[in-house]
Image (cartoon, rainbow, N blue to C red; front, side, top):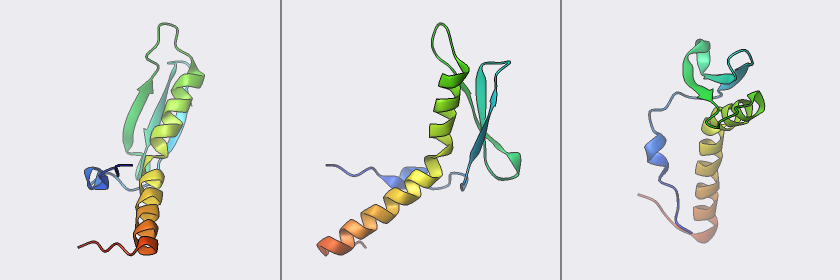
Length: 86
């Protein structure tokens, strides 16, 4: 399986990110430290739901944690297989 190039995420705001739902707008907002807005998530379907906006926001908010976990996993795979990186 081809690895994801994690350098494409260099420079992104550091996590953890959090989110909150705005049911009156049927959307959710993802924020980094100090309340800096990272994304506003709107449902892209004809009849949007708050649940879909929340699920999408939860996925986006998990981004920094997922990237860090994948970096660690790649490093462990490399260690176990004897691969060295320059």
